[in-house]
Length: 454
Image 1 (tube, one colour):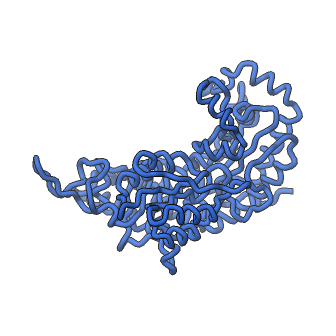
Image 2 (cartoon, rainbow, N blue to C red):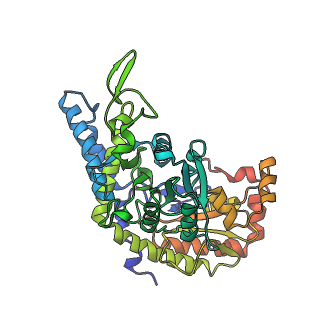
Image 3 (spheres, rainbow, N blue to C red):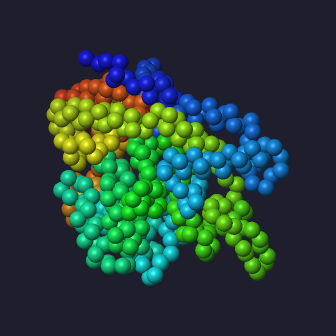
């Protein structure tokens, strides 16, 4: 039996979670959103603070009007709020605002020098494409292996650090996998990277809203050199991302994206660049996005990021145990140890393509999930044991179905009742496969965006 504890008070802080959506002709229901690893809904307080600030919205930096000076102050104050939440040290670190995590990693890939000839980047076999592709044309990239359960192999990390001797410029790793929800031991990884005279970048896109992060620690060996994350996965829309790293990295050389606001003085044959972070923030900045992120951070801090994690951890265990009872469901990753996971669960149902299953859940039960490879193709291929032959056939014929999975991912507002709805829907689909396959696979073109309400 469900109790009041199964409906977290966190839910009351999130906007839009009780809105009814169209489901078939003249039928409406409250959508169950299990696609939070892609984007979270906004916090009510975020929208309140954005609206409150909007009457004072103005250009920032160099404007003399009161609104401009106020906006500039709020913009710069946001760096302090972020630094405190992420354990950054503004005496040596700089906080650079970008559009999202992908842009943050791309910016660093252009600005990171090959210090003392170091030209190797160690990525991993579980990374999102955004933490792999930006490095490929600029450095030699190698990939730290995963074990049979899909977890990162620290043994292989150390082996590769030794293999490349002093040539590893950076170890770049996801704080949390967006496929299996594994929490990587970032402080142990930092210690290994520093032991072999390298630095570490943590892709915090999936980490920032679920677990506390401390970039600077009592033991410097555990320090995180670079951190990137996006506001839209932290209950703050409006398109802002953050790159945090040592000021020294951005002091020398030209920015990757020059323009207004990046300089101190310009002539036709001379440029003196501004100091970071302004050197790296060309053009008029997204101050509304920054205000939204600051508001989200203050709210998450108030609610307690540890408390959020503990709640989501219990929900994850509840969901995994429930999924085990559904016939023909195969889950990926370790489904018996919940100590190093957040609420990201991937699965397939035997006999139904992942896209078809995702569509059925949406159109029949109002449950929003995600399907595919989640911008982590090599990791998916490994977890699914996809052969090189199958991959090559797919490369040569894009009409072939792509291997993939269905992913559910929790936010702090989800609850056990919603998980029960998912389990019930999957049981119904499993029992009535022929009916659903006939309905959805005989005319696939009609299964996407079929509602006239859109």
